[in-house]
Image (tube, rainbow, N blue to C red; front, top):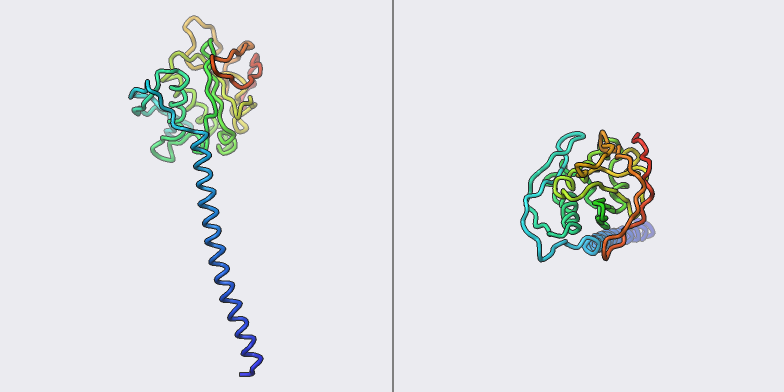
Length: 236
């Protein structure tokens, strides 16, 4: 074999070995990045979603509405330690709805959804403020959006009889629809007062029209700004 050919082959062999070593190092580096990003995400969620517990928590049989087939939700009774404080109790229920489905098929809200805030106004109106992922990571479609809203509304209605109606915000803002279909510009009835004359929505996604609401923050809390809901747009 000519000497020059031996030199070329030797150089190629060394280059291949260096490439393999570099590839292994790159893979290890990428794995390290994945672990770091995962750790940072867990830390971020731990800050945004600290476990809600209070000294008044007592084990209670709560009804959580999860998916029960295409376009349907149904109550599942689970025991939860719930606070006597209505705001904290509502937050605990919604966090259970997000985090505790037994199977992936039962999930109605994206796992990455964060409850950013919950407020109860003096007239019994509840305001639930969710992170952007509730809208951005939910499959667009009337069924998936209706199930998401229905699970929120019915979970609160079944466990919080003092709440009259619900306003859903996304990152502190009123949005027209959840992910393109279900109307979020109005309010969803929870437990209307017996003497209250309401125009009840015929289905989730068609919230009842309400007169303009003067928002007053509960003590120690400042709910996000709410737009007037004197008219409700029909869902598409």
